[in-house]
Amino acid sequence: MSIRVDAGLRSELRHYGAPDLDACFNCGNCTAVCPLSETGVPFPRKTIRYLQVGAKDRLLKGLEPWLCYYCGECTQTCPREADPGEAMMAMRRYLIAEYDWTGLGRLFYKSKLWELTALGLVSAFVIALFALFHGPMVTDRVELLTFAPVEWVEPGDWVLALVLGGLMLSNVYRMYRLAMSEGPGVLERPMLYLEELKTLVLHFLTQVRYLQCKDKKYWVNHFLIMTGYSTMFMLVVGLLRWFQTDNIYPIYHPQRFVGYYGFCALAYGCTVALIGRFRKRDPIHVHSHTSDWAFLVLLLLTSVTGILVHVFRYVEMPLPTYYMFVIHLAIAVPMLVVEVPFSKWPHLAYRPVAMYLANIQARAAESEDRPAVVGAEPA
Ligand code: SF4
Ligand code: SF4
Image (tube, rainbow, N blue to C red; front, top):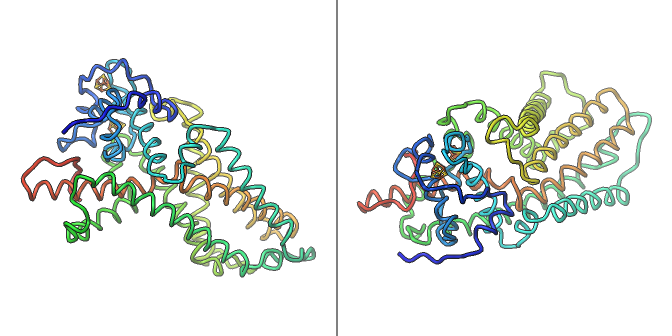
């Protein structure tokens, strides 16, 4: 099959943090040591080769960058210090931007100024909404539901979830179209798509593939951030009326227990990841793109301001509760609007989808007795 070459691909990838790959002489050492490349799929070497020669089409159709969990073992053993782990990371950022049809992902990845301005504008919008439309501020006791009635906040949550979910799904569809352009499509092998749904669910909920990497602590931290985030999302979008009340329940009540889990998992996971990025001791933390910082810092601030709302309510401080609630939303909403569809966050969705599609490709190839386009371990 002919490969169309894009001479500008390498310089384009620099915007996404790709290292200089001139040093790479395609020895394949990185592929040999990669714990996730064990079933005959030559990554990261093959993907790096695509990048070197400007094979944009191959890169866009490939799922390999998503099969990498960035353990850094290839980077540690590369004889030319070409940093293949970071190259895979840069390719994931590039793919996120390319799947996004609005073009905003590309804009935010390429320009710190645009990303920070977008975050600032959404934040200012949230503050302006509260300044104009908040309910009465009861000051002799805490009445958060009077200040911010749940009947107002809940529809806002749902609209946000629908818009962001729609954007994410449309981008996932573009990923599917690219990755499965050489088949099999869902209409060709519907049973295969159905049978492999378990792969999608398993990898989304557990990121179990990460456990194949030597250092298990990365999986633990990733799992904490993922479950903390999912817990808080479920509480705020699906169970807001149960979660946002003016009642203080006993400590053993599930509402408090679940909320504390979300806070602790996010606060711990984000703090550990941020400390790692400040220290730069592990290969996976040496390079940090603005989107990496923004994602972790906003998640941490969202969880800390969320627990502060709870603390102020608990110790009966009305005004700090209301102000902290506004600050909390002025951080959480821009994080959701900018990070979920356009920046670092979508990897939580693309990675399990990639496992799913890769397994479908592998099984289809197996049944037709031909090499897989890309491969993955059986579910
Ligand atoms: S990135 Fe390093 S280990 Fe991998 S093929 Fe290139 S030179 Fe070899
Ligand atoms: S970072 Fe780890 S998982 Fe990713 S390609 Fe390198 S060795 Fe494989």
